[in-house]
Image 1 (cartoon, rainbow, N blue to C red):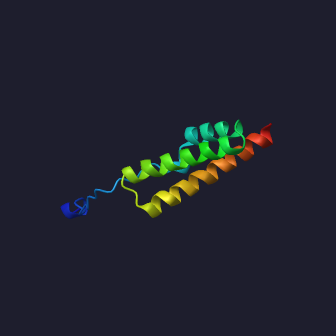
Image 2: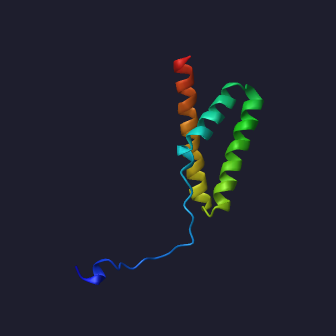
Image 3: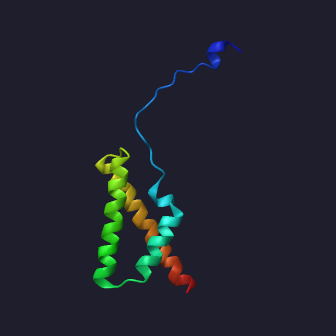
Length: 90
């Protein structure tokens, strides 16, 4: 095989691609468990804080506003699904 077959040009990027927030299973389960034990304003404040912290973390890692928002929405969906699973099992 010619040497050039192994020498592919590589482009390096300074972009950090964070692990998908919705796949952070332990975090999803922890948040769902916390939310399940809260009511009304306490639940709303907790949820807002978690989502803001996640968005801020993602922005610090280099995500754009759009990317961070999409990741938070995906995370929210996973937490909602986990809450549904908790209630189906219970």
